[in-house]
Length: 77
Image 1 (cartoon, helix red, strand yellow):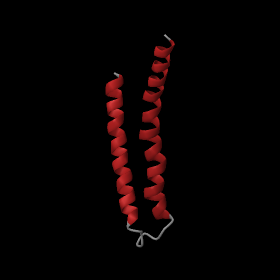
Image 2 (image 1 turned 135 degrees about the horizontal axis):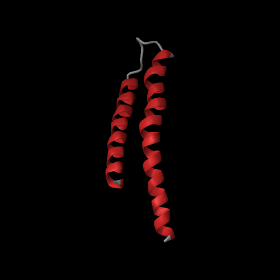
Image 3 (image 1 turned 180 degrees about the vertical axis):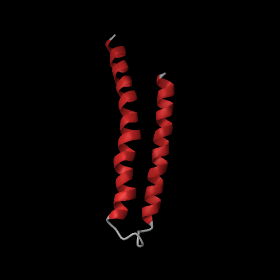
């Protein structure tokens, strides 16, 4: 009985917290600071080439988070 209750609490918290942090906090804080704030504090004409690679990988990671959230809701349903 306790194990089922524990699993239910962990599953419910995961379903609520994961989308909040991965689909709201990550793009709102991390992506904003790496894409927009980095250009604000540097010269726009002389951006290090890894800037584009790094931000491209972060955007791909954001799409993966959206996909994983979809799968999480599909499984939890």
